Image (cartoon, rainbow, N blue to C red; front, side, top):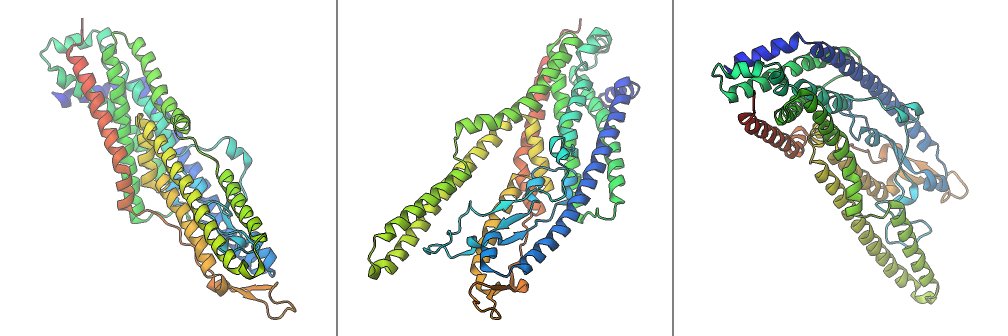
Length: 463
């Protein structure tokens, strides 16, 4: 009985005008989005290759210590190919970063250069060939299309699933034939969800085939697993919003009222909650800016240097060492407190936004694609470690130029001994683990919406 009702729903939807609009819209948006994002990925790959050569040449051309102290080492993280589907934080993660030469000095030394800091001296650069218009109108990726467009389509398919059939008197006729109400509801959910997922799958496969023929697009075996999981999560997300539409349909007697409530619910869950949550979290966990922390560190070091001026010459060496250790301890405590509070603010934003299935879907998708907050934090930690690797190996790759009259002021860079920057990427197991909570929340939303619609439908007046 359930399959018969589901088959009827699919047939009715396939012949409806909204299904035709749905399949055309999905083809245009999904295929077009993949084409745009694949082209964007190719451009970022070119930026990466060109930038790496430029940074290498610039480093080898440095011949003075002052120049190295000012510009230091610049590296380019490689863009992720799965950013084609879920851009997430990929724009930030694939930017060049610069570590000035002063940041490689020994910490705790009262020298003419500043001690290394977790917050100071690492500057992200913008894309060297970017069109500024893209900053104003950023191209939508696959996750954006699913999150915004497909969720709205799911609710538009579901808003009249019950109230519309009541108005047409078909629901009353169906129930008078002793058809169980639970079978009617489950059949409508299955039929309606499949009616949306079928054109979605077709559009996705068409978009995927249109980009794999490009020479620079090559997916590994793990990438294909991630893409499959991303498709499954998207299907679950569609089912959640279809069930939400059914809930609102069972709460009303007229399809027009259900449509208005569906639009309000969509705006609340997709637009309001994800965007308001960071603002609320910022008020809950106020935080100084990174620049303010750096200025405070500079003030601490300046005060210590002033204190050193009043120390007798014979005691200066010992006092310099103790002050250096004190600077390191105070700045480290200051930075650690800032980073802990920043982590609290981020966690508060994430947890508040999870009140919406839209946020849970986005977090799960970007984690599976390796472009989420976890991978972004790993990259930041890796940059900090690389900063200290440069410091520890400074004497190996930064050599005095003995051919000059004052070799201490001139340098020769041994590029072969420069530490290699290895970009961290979460493995598949870690990405799935990071997504489990959001996947569980999507299941909870689906079950909760189904139970509400089921309870309401059992009491629904079909007359």
